[in-house]
Amino acid sequence: GNQWGYGKDDGPSAWNKNYPIADGDRQSPIDILPHQARHDPNLGPIVLNYDRCTSINIANNGHSVVVEFEDSDDRSVIQGGPLDNPYRLKQFHFHWGGKGCHGSEHTVEGNSYASELHLVHWNAVKFKTFGDAASTPDGLAVLGIFLETGDEHRWLHMITDALYTVKFKGSVTDFKGFNPKCLLPSSLHYWTYLGSLTTPPLHESVIWIVVKEPMIVSEKQLGKFRTLVFTGEEEDERTRMENNFRPPQLLKGRTVRSSN
Ligand SMILES: CCN[C@H]1CN(CCOC)S(=O)(=O)c2sc(S(N)(=O)=O)cc21
Ligand SMILES: [Zn+2]
Image (cartoon, rainbow, N blue to C red; front, side, top):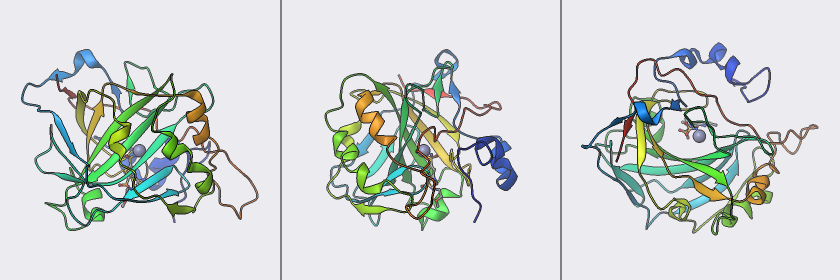
């Protein structure tokens, strides 16, 4: 298939060769300028109903570490804010940098955070399958949460303690009973704009909801993400999984709205 990555030859600047939409009009991530965001009083709060969510497994897909959820009904949905329908939680994953470097995808006034968590949801009211939703405008709603280094996060160890089981590309292990609500910051004030997947196939199908308040994690916890490798166990080289983020893309006239 179309091999892409985050290296010199297969990284974000080369993606437009196989995915011309990379140069499209609603690409993500972007640099967010809070003072230019339009405060929209009609933007209600984001409502997360994750209480009956069912996590299934944790996997290394060669690009990130992903936790998948049961999405055969509306047991875990996000709604409100800019969304017209409830969107079902499908998976969450992270993007991060190298030691001491920054690794978020969205930036705020040119500043990046150490990492960024993406909770991926799809509109099962309008679409029959996740795949259809992922390739159609506004089929997906991704909640982005920045990670900043500081004190240890009291619940993130549930993820970082499992990372050794998915060190290599293609590894998957059971991961039951995890509710990502424990990762959210206290305030869910957000910016929202229309964008895309930040990895190939870069579909322009995402309503982005970027939470303003970062979650705080320790450098030690973040370091555990860097014990993962992009490569498979059977491959010779062991390429440390880090800097798996796409840089900000042109706004191309889009408006970023702000909840209060
Ligand atoms: C490595 C592949 N990543 C993608 C896989 N999927 C897309 C197509 O699948 C049918 S997806 O919808 O799960 C998402 S969301 C997402 S981001 N970083 O914008 O939140 C990237 C991807
Ligand atoms: Zn992502």
